Length: 75
Image (tube, rainbow, N blue to C red; front, side):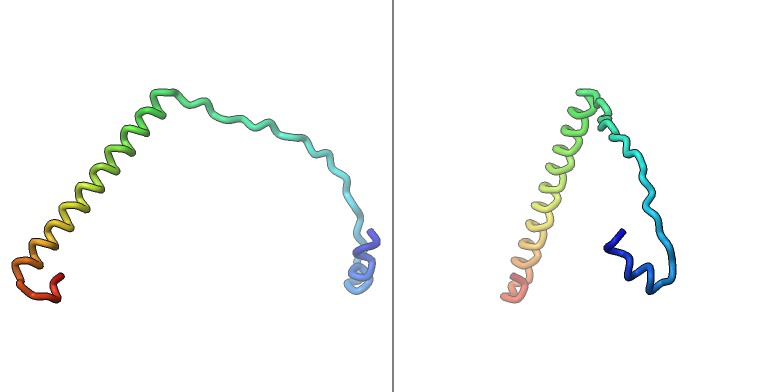
């Protein structure tokens, strides 16, 4: 190749281009069961609700602690 002639000379090597046949691969997607998708959705939804509830409990606990301390810094 003309683009690499100077590199070949500098490194004192000979190169040759190897032609290969590229076979296109077919995209094979796994077929998922509708029930699996529904189950995953329900599980994710339940986890998000649980996370929100825990966050609300934490905030309520912090506010309660701040009110009991009667310190402006606690807020």
